[in-house]
Length: 244
Image (cartoon, rainbow, N blue to C red):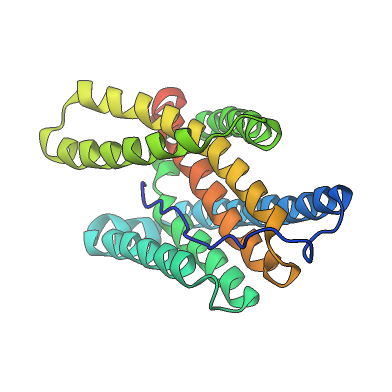
């Protein structure tokens, strides 16, 4: 799943009317980041519960296996939701943006249900904790580092485009070597994107007016949610044990 779009949320220039002191800036930024992580966590819960519920439904899994159009419909719906949220975030109400984010998490849960039939529950859980640890470490790094990660972002964006192209090519070539390369590249790319997105969200939080922080929390949660999910899926290729 590489339906990741970089949000183009405009960042207002800093001026004294937003935050008068450095301590206020730190407090505001911390509050926004807490909302980002909370929304992201709730989104992951929605995805996980829906995936597990659907995987336990024989009728749903049979319907999905015998109707390929349904899976592609879910995939298209995900892309549409990401585009709508990313491009319309400044024009929609905060509650609407939040609702669309959770709708995206729910649709993604429907699409990811088959992994519970392909991989063992133990290996999925193990991979989740590995992913959570890796994601957490890189997000902490992105938040606290004083290094400007802008150059990372530019490089990772083009690397992500290359990854998508290679994945499409491998659909037709079925090359195990290329698949291995794609998996390694996917892990590295989304590890880097986690740090970059975290720093970018933090910088935006420092200068975003209070009335827009709810929408910033949603778009930030969406970015990190996509980083987490994609990192998890690529790690699952390495640590997932397939069912007999």
